[in-house]
Amino acid sequence: MSVTHDEVRHIARLAELDVAEETLEVLAAEMSSILAYIAQISGVPASEGVKPFVPGPDAVRFRADEVKPWPLAFGPERLAPAFKDGFFLVPKLGAFEDADA
Amino acid sequence: MNDPSQALADAKAAADRIVKAKRLNASLTPAKELRKSLLAAAAAAHPSGVLYGMAVAVKDTICTLEFTTTCGSKILEGYRSPYDATAVAKLRAAGALIAGKTNCDEVAMGSSTEHSAFGRTLHPFDRTRVPGGSSGGSAALVAAGAVPAALGSETGGSVRQPASFCGVVGIKPTYGRVSRSGLVAFGSSLDQIGVLGRSVHDAARVLSVISGRDARDATCEDRDSLRLPTVPESLQGFVIGIPKEYFPADLDPAVRRACDRVIRLLKEQGAAVREVSLPHTAYAVPTYYVVAPAEASSNLARYDGARYGPRFDGATDVRALYRATRGAGFGAEVRRRILLGTYVLSSGYYDAYYRKAQQMRALIAQDFRNAFDRGVDLLFTPTTPTPAFKAGEKLADPVAMYLSDCFTVTANLAGLPALSLPIGRCKGLPIGGQLIGQAFLEDELIEAAYAIERVVPAVEEA
Image 1 (cartoon, rainbow over the protein chains, first blue to last red):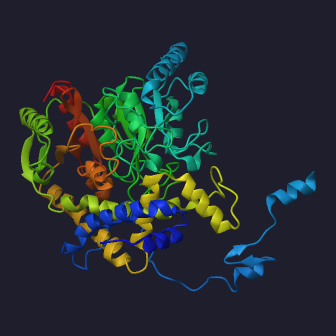
Image 2: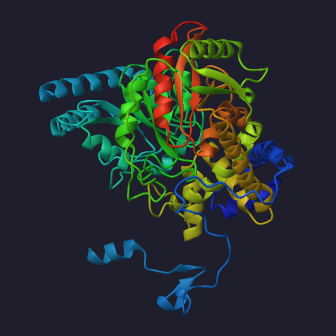
Image 3: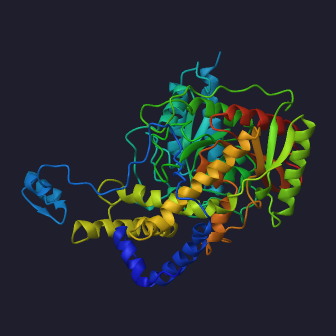
């Protein structure tokens, strides 16, 4: 299992984590070595019928990991004066402080 | 009747001992703040509490009102929780004195307490070695005699492994025995608060106080707190299993000798001892390093510079702010595990890694059930493959570091209670033996530990 620099950059973006270019070499090597070590579980015969183990009270169980329709009647962009790339746009807090001064 | 003036004297003495142990870098609380807080706690504690006057240090992954809760991370530097963890609140209600916060690997990710943003903790007997981790600060303070007990937290062995390295007792209860409310989340299906103590009795009575139902944690079982067993006359009637997979050919010879001595003593105490097999043990560490980083990558998403701790500003938009804060705030090991967790959960890899690891976890838990179903009450194993290793020895090789938890992660994956206690020395360094029990039967675990503690020459060379 070999992880490329581009894959590290992609994963770092998904994880919202700045990764310095000069650390990519080491990170890619370390991730490759850890993933190679982890990969040994893929060779273990475990039938698809084995249910995931979740400790704790029976009432607490994982939800199915699935994409569901948006539960609102309309999108959140209609709830705010401004909305961009999934975020509500609001004035900077500093703007209020300046106004009070 | 408990004496308030004695409690004040004890609080002052505890503060003095913790300050004296400063060279270990085990406590993160400044001396002046610690003294003031301990004296105030002694004055406020109710004398009828079962832990009245007992100084208990708390790992920095557990929220306390009066001290910062940083998890050994820059990303939470200066953070003060608006509430006490349930375990801490229960300690206070029982009259215990919270004796500051202890150093740990950042966000509890590590096995050596070298990954703390506030410097490494030294081993109490040999400063060139590590105290284990991630609850290394708690273990070192107890081993140095500064406090009789301390809270730690476990995701893969972070109480038992440092307990073993430092020569103290460490208990990880059954998943759901102690509330996780106020424990900073790392791997939510694995995390439990545990206790480190100078003796089985000290650790057990603290565990008894912090255990029990809590409406603030849905994964905490609706059970009464743990009732402490008495010290048994013998181990007559106990069947103790020795899992052969925990005694590999390359096990440190001194660890093997110490374990053999305990097995002999168990038989002399009347226990029936039999070999058992837990065939999926070898897959526990790789399974753990899928499940734990996957859960961590989700849990740690909340540290983004907007809600907790410092903000690394100057960014042009909110995403850049998140990335800059997280990139600068997390240390190398935490960054590595977040990336690993994100990778195994990402599209195309989920089934190959995460689903497979969940199946492996079920098989590992089934191994234990099979052993217990065949009449075994408890399992006895070494806690770690070697005594404490040298500082820096495993820093460049993450997999080698992960393997130091190979005998402890199984109990976390299966949600079972386990206890480490000192069973001998190797060139002066402590060796730990581990008991693994059935879910919610911590009383059996503690009974057997009492019996071993009474007869094993814990400070003699093995």
